[in-house]
Amino acid sequence: MIDKLTLYMSFPYVRYALIVGVFIALSSSLLGVTLVLKRFSYIGDGLSHVAFGAMAVASVLKIANQELLILPVTVLCAIVLLRTGQRAMIKGDAAIAMLSVGSLAFGYILMNVFSASANVSGDVCSTLFGSASILTLTKDEVVLCAVLSAVVVVMFILLYNKIFAVTFDENFSRATGVRADVYNLMIAIMIALIIVISMNLVGSLLISALVIFPAISAMRLFNSFRGVTIFSAVLSVVCAFAGMIISILTGTPVGSTIVVTDVLAFAIISGIGAIKGGA
Image (cartoon, rainbow, N blue to C red; front, side, top):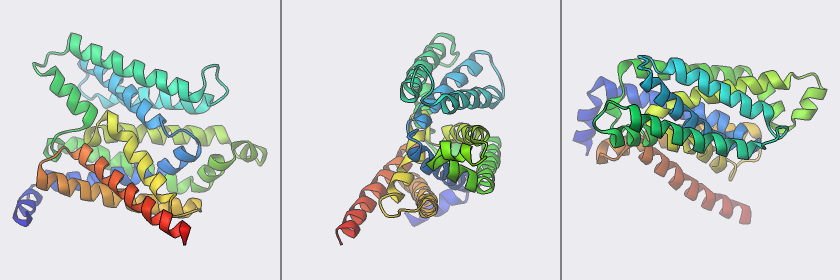
């Protein structure tokens, strides 16, 4: 196994993908805590399906750089969902479900009707569950993922105090002069960026796992927002790196392996949290 790992690590694309996987895990875990506390845990799944539908449209229109369409569409939907919240006629959870199912069905129909590929099922499966191999990531995708992930991390650090305020009590934040709408907009943009950059690694159906599992795992051990955020980031990076290494050694799909690693980590930490609570 060591020889096999050494052989794979000699390929530059594998090293790049490991680095990008760590960046994606870090950026997604940071916002996961906010989404869980704001009761928007399902938004990652909904927006990933929106991105899938936008990708199908970009494929039909034969747009070379699909992110030029996927990113603005996903950002727009994220803004609509987070800004309307519970004030809309269709409540937040119902709106997310409608967008999720509708976009997924719309994208799948487009890929079947207009696709020029002979293996439509394989293309859809790869998009929904992530690339079967780390080596399928291109150099341009690696650079784009690294840059966008760095943007998300920097934005989160700079806006940390404001994100903390609107996460716990948005109404009180408005009363104290915080422009909650602006920071909700920033959160929406960061979520959309995470969705777009994560699709190549874990696929549309598994993105929400990267966002949610580290956050809810950290909440089993820590009570403070800072503690949960830091532990969530560390745990997400460790699970992503371990999942990719296991995927290399066993030949399993990257995205699914990372998610399974997150699930196992959650089970272990839940047990530790139960013991700690009992003590």
